[in-house]
Structures are given as structure tokens and as C-alpha cells.
Image 1 (cartoon, rainbow, N blue to C red):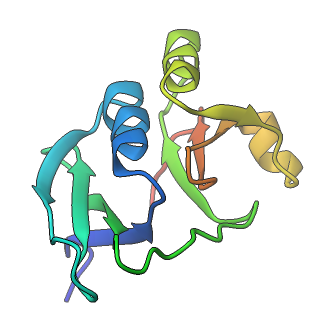
Image 2 (spheres, one colour):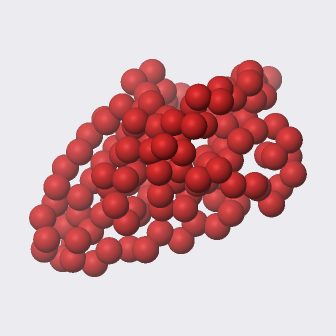
Image 3 (spheres, helix red, strand yellow):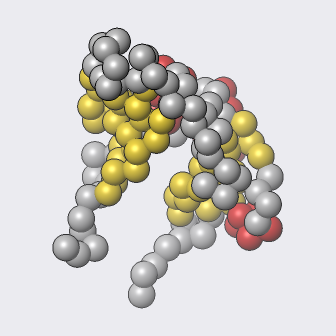
Length: 134
């Protein structure tokens, strides 16, 4: 393994259509995969979203026969380092597609970014700083 391994971040969702609106129409991720598992126990509906050039993607799961309630905390964050000002129109678009701008309990994220809750309560931080692992 190395730093180029692909990462999948999987989360339960109450509503895959709402998740898709926020993450795809709001943030701009593309649908990587979608499937319907049916209503039998243990079968689930699946939505995967990501950017084609990224080494990660998000997976949202909904099991009609036994839904799992998302339980994010205010510290469960997906941080995207945008390397410059967070575009106001992006924040507005995220809000128009089901997001809610919130303050972070960590003052660092309030100073350096914008925090938006998705329809399931998971937090996305758009950080205006850049990232370097050097």
C-alpha cells in the first residue's frame, strides 16, 4: 500500500435522492455508481459520488428493510482544501440543494473555512487553505 490507494468513505443515508442533490448538484461530484438492492433484509440501495480525477469517493447506503439512522457528530468532518477563497456561489448552491451552513465548535474551521451540513447531518468543511503533505 501507498499514499495513492483509493479511499471510499461510506455512510448511511435517510434519503439517497437528497444526498445526491447536495453532493452532486450542490458540490459538483459525479455519480460513480448507483444500484437498487430491493426490499429484502440485507439488501440495500447504493449511491457512490466522486470527482473522476480524485483518489476517493463517497458511498451512501440505504437499506429499505432496516434503515440505519445516520449519527454524525459536529466533529465528523469531510474537509476539502480549496486553496483560496470559498466561492460564495458554491455555498449558496449547497444551501439551495439541501445544505445548512453551521458554525463549527472548533474555531479553526470558522476562521479558515465554511462548514455546511448535508441532509443527513454530516459536515463538509470548505477550507480556504491549501494542503501540502510536505
